[in-house]
Length: 129
View 1 (cartoon, rainbow, N blue to C red):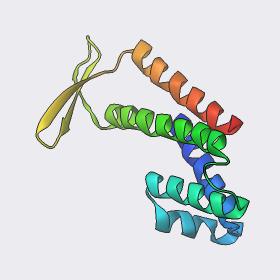
View 2 (cartoon, rainbow, N blue to C red):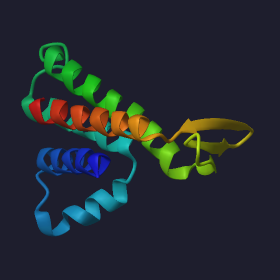
View 3 (cartoon, rainbow, N blue to C red):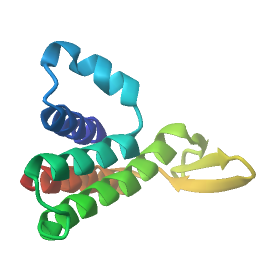
């Protein structure tokens, strides 16, 4: 759920900079799809609508970039947890297979709570930005 709120924030920011009416917003979001594409559009359109260069508002863009980069990193960890297979319940270990590589994923309550707390922190930093 924490990731969903981060993604919803990015979707709302995109629709805001686009000036898209709510009744077609879901269609726009569905067509764009990719998180990176949404972020790129937010930055580019925000830059154009503000009418100032990225250099002049670099602090704002840096804060947004940092929060979104962090969101993307932690989304990767979240995806690893979701897509792994439990291989050892007593040790809380999962196995994630990606193309030609395999990774162990720690699934203990402490690890999952840490991931959740970090996603919440990222969401809060986006809300402040």
